[in-house]
Image 1 (cartoon, rainbow, N blue to C red):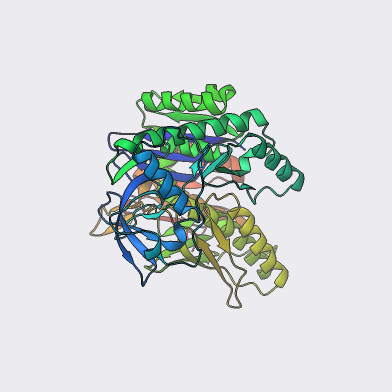
Image 2: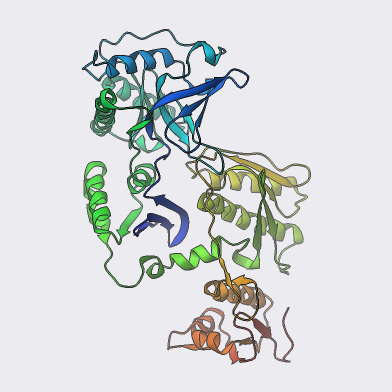
Length: 512
């Protein structure tokens, strides 16, 4: 599998597109004025406690106060408060936890009024960015994510990612972590740590400890609310979480960002520095790599798939609903049950991609095509879980209900990615689908027609579109001929609206 990260930078934000074998699978945006990214640590001030909710509102500098529930305080809250006070007052100069005497863990069933008070300063970490009218969700159980491990202050526990299923590898990693971790810090081994040698683990651990020390140096002069540790920029955090041997290129149009990537690769994978490239062409970088076209075709209400099938994606305040449609295609070679399974498997792969692309969170309900064979339902469920397994976001997939619905819950930590794909209609009032995806629609229809083994097919389109389809020796029309071994006649129609097209058979009858 070939993996590429394409980064587009402009004056106000940075867009990150992750491609696998040329297909867009993730899209992220980093707004340069975003002060509340997941992972940021703040010296905050408790605004007020709410005994009825067993929670508190905390001032981190956001327009809306952050929400802190008792269960997000972490059992080591007393130790954290004691340490923060010692550092703030200058009593502790050694910012490691050597010699630090831990306090007793707080009662996991306790009351928030018993452990924090209004006006108190508290170190907290953003776990969910501000969404809609809500402020950030925060936790005082701090952690610092590295490439191979996550450093957890005020803990001695060593744990391993559940995605590592080999018990021998789990024990090996635990042994290595125990041998290198400093006293007072816990460690969580990440999935990418599989097979990693102790020297690489230790290098990653020392980098995370240095970030902790640098954060603590800021605390004595900080005035709440103030950020004391920033999460890595989005480029570095994406590389930290997904970088592997399959990466073939990391390309950006920004020279300073290119240098940042080189510096980060120097630390985590110096042998891969050559894959980082600075894009200098005058053609926009997302246009050159075909990303704009994929965005337009992937973010609409209707999403086309192979075999003429498509998804309809609707959003409500409480949940997301996805409807799977076969496109009324017929397949004489297969039974109706086999056709339903085939379309549902294609849809499951696309749904997993869509959830990642749009960063959809909360409850997602999918209405697959009805399947009456138990083995087919199990195949679909297993396939969907496998496709979702690559997601770094916490999620759960429930088996199909008796009504054929599949429910998915997916953690929401930042606002959903929503891109307007429709454009102003050149012929009348209102909006139409973007012309950039018109060819995809035509080709999807053509696939269905070719399955019916028709001959003498002609395509009627607006003259501008006809010119695009027939332009050059390697025209789209010629590619269709080489693919299907049938010549598709292109008929220019000046009277057609720009986006209208019709396939007709040898008797000039429209093919529905």
